Image (cartoon, rainbow, N blue to C red; front, top):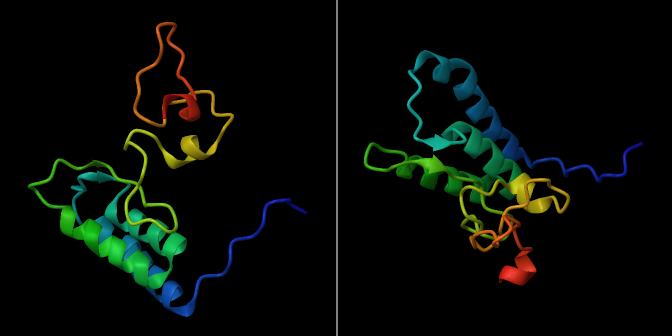
Length: 128
C-alpha cells in the first residue's frame, strides 16, 4: 500500500481529448519532421494540461500553446501552469519537480535572485 493518494480518474471528455492526442502522437507525429520550438512538445504539453486541468481548460491551454508555436517565436521551456492559474508562475528554468521538492539538492532561487557571495542560494522566504 502506498501513502500517496491516487489521482482522480479523468472525466469522459478528458479521456476523449487524451485519446485524440494519443492518436496524433502514435500515428501522425512520427511521420512529421521534428520542429517543435518548445519543451515539452506541444502534444506532451496538451496531455499534461488535460490531466492537470481537465478537458475544457486543458484544451484551451493546449490551443493557446499551439497558437504560440510558430516561426516568429523563440520557443524555449514552457511548463503547464499549476491548478488555479493560467500562467506558470516560476522562471522557465525552474522545473516543477524542483520547485515542489524542498529537499532538491540543486536548490534554485524562487525569485530569480542570484546566489550570495559564497555561492549559496537563499530560500524563497529570504529572497522575497
